[in-house]
Image 1 (cartoon, rainbow, N blue to C red):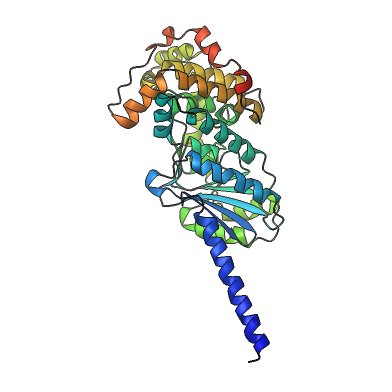
Image 2 (image 1 turned 120 degrees about the vertical axis):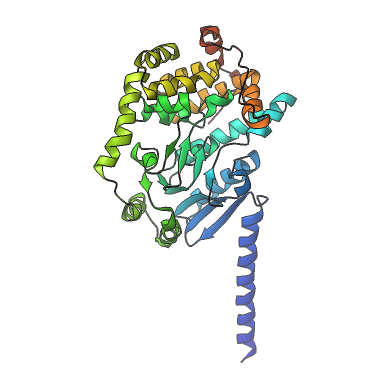
Length: 381
């Protein structure tokens, strides 16, 4: 072996070692809570807090956003895939406890997290390259924001989708005012007010996911995705279609058709009070269950959410996010968010003391003020 070959071999080993080190640094620089990898021409994001069901915090947001912007400009990145670590959740929501503590202490996290999360949601909604969210497991709140605005959302039989915010004195944010009123009939309003949980195939059937794939095929699907050469959106769609198992018409009609019918009949109303009246008059098992559910929710959140869905139907995603930032800050100034988190997540007595405690106690003026401009503090996209 000549000295030149020895030198070339050394340089190759050094280059490979450098690539491994760079890859490791790329994967760990977010404090391991979110991992980034380049696999072929695909950028892969892994939410890496499995013990916390991959709940999204500000540190993760501050790493995901610049990485997405970087990959969007990188000519060697053709596709982005986002997934959750572990076998239980894609992302079960935001770091609610941290926001609660910050709000009580007057910390700026209550502004920063919502602002930066919504900016990230908008980035995903306007992303130019194929963006594939593998929502294999629990997908709620902040996890919905990381997936729903992307072009492709792949559900599995383990997917559990919900926007349960009215139960903790919030509202279905992260662009909920945009995608929920665009679902069929009154389904979006129903999901927003009640926090109803959709599972598995139904998530795709109602249009929240674009595809349904069995969870044991997700690893194979991801491999085939990263093997695509310079894929267009249509290339990705064609691959996802090849993995998708078709569901029978009878199945689709029995549950989803009935749900849509019930939602349209009972939730077509001009106010939350009218919806409650519809439910009581109906008297069916479904109606009684929803009456019971809504009675547990924050009256202020219910009225905020009803108005949010009404307004959002006519807005762009960007306009909705500006509106929702105003609502988030109104909730941070109020009582019900802190009380809801106490009752549901901290003390777990499931008995929140809402203020006001009734729908009639929530004035139109109070709701109107929540939608008011924040002036210089408004969200800017």
